[in-house]
Length: 239
Image (cartoon, rainbow, N blue to C red; front, side, top):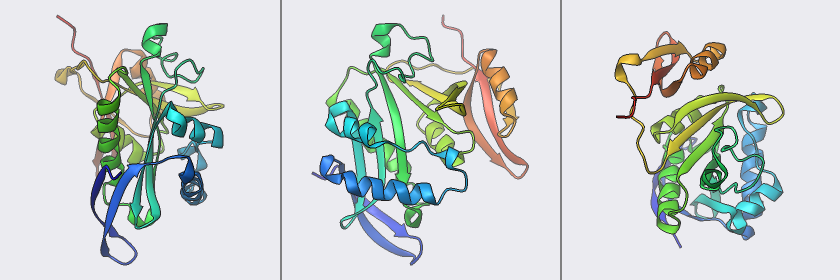
């Protein structure tokens, strides 16, 4: 069943093509790894992407999450996943020091892949919207949306901010690789104090860590002629 359909531009030929989005299942395993491998091999820095293993993919496809795929005809050109970590030691709720019951309500935004020929079409954002709609329509248990992102992965940082997630921590994950921890509460809003904005260059990650430890959160990426800047702010005090 198609969950979404639309048009996008095939960049090499500058032609408009139709695409559809549907949920992936175990029969799509080969298509997924073909796309993931192609993208991984094209990265200048492999630390930008944490690929899914076969066991992780099968867990998601076996009702341990939701995986969507975007197709042009029968060709998989994009994929995006949510994962329910449950009692897994990699549950980001541990990093956030959530109590057990709240950790069980954590959902991870996992891998997001877009074929290089179709970048620039906002396909990553489209898949995110459809994915979160599917979560909302199929399960109202989860309240904590979390993910990790490499400080080098600017498109993914922009994507998370566009969905309303904020940077709450910076930690060494995946055998010592530095990652932002993004977070969003799916029920409650956490407004920021607009008078507390601080702009820090994207490459000054040690300063990012310092301000996060002082209680600031990262809320936006500002791209200027002078470079890319993460905007940090304090959350408003609850009345």
